[in-house]
Image 1 (cartoon, rainbow, N blue to C red):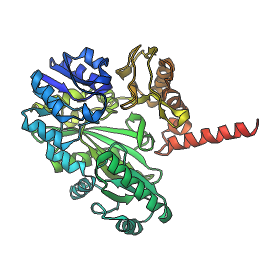
Image 2 (cartoon, rainbow, N blue to C red):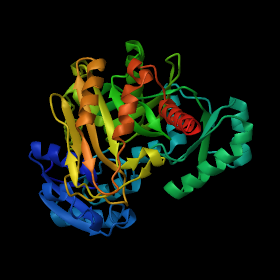
Image 3 (cartoon, rainbow, N blue to C red):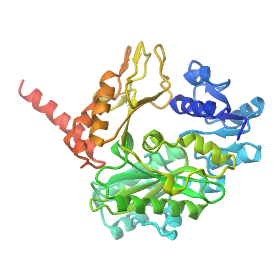
Image 4 (cartoon, one colour):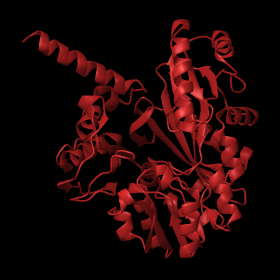
Length: 461
């Protein structure tokens, strides 16, 4: 096992990684930007190194600064968390060349799965079901249009180098295609410095289901069930749960087997997530693989009892998996609500500020992952995630009730501070969610219904 791990991230995930390391007796190094000098992980870690000013490209994305911090502190491994450099093959390669263990897949695997077109081809060759679409990046608008006409509308245009729900647009028909293509290309270039796009069939009323896998350097692999991630706005997840409601057990088993086959096909190492789109008939198709720990990983931890970060560290250090598939047993239901500092009444605009009051929920089987504390000033430069509130219970109905109680207890207040807490309570109260009969359109339906109701209220004044 490693003696010291540098955590190349910030916020709640940095603190969460540091806690698992402490339980394992592994020393930690936090890195921080000027904006994050008062962050919780800086106080919690064994050491902390300032790596640059607030802008991410000059701090958390500054590879030389991160590597230098690792060398100066004597770290022998780097955990990238999620986001930032977590899926950057160049960063993983630099770590490898500098005798630092990258806690994640090898750089070659990151490069292969980071190219969504290459990932589609690889998974198809491994026998995973794939949605109809282009065989690789489309060269130009007219090539993309021909693909769309061949496979039939609606289609989705995606960034080949994309991830995190960014760089994609849906075209319901031929008239909307050019705008979808242009917008996706522009966003892909801006976010990923790569305008390459591919086209695939879009599944209306789809569910977004993902499979958590672990695979070690010796070729052993397990899956830890599925997570339902369909409560999302503009492809950004707001609430997740495990297991997925109203999804047949045999479908879950086949998805797990498919994910493991995909992991074997690329020589995956570490914790990873294989994401699938599921249609109304419970047919599933591979979407993409995420080569990192996920924001929503705690729901899997609560139902399986497996600490995924500790498993990541063990695998990266060369240990064999301590689990076999028969050892993985899911119990009950877990929900995760992402508490973002955003204002749902202003189109979910960021609403950072100073937390004058921050009271966390408690009670049986409630977990909160957060880097916030009373007096904490949320920087405007980074992701708006403040906390993840989780609830577990023996049944889904009890888990929903427990989550409702937890969100009622949560208080995050201060000048200009707004959070998604109230909107998430609306999701939990919605009959479509409570029955488990929902898809990725649920949030947009709720927003539209609220807008219609506001319009009716104004018209009757």
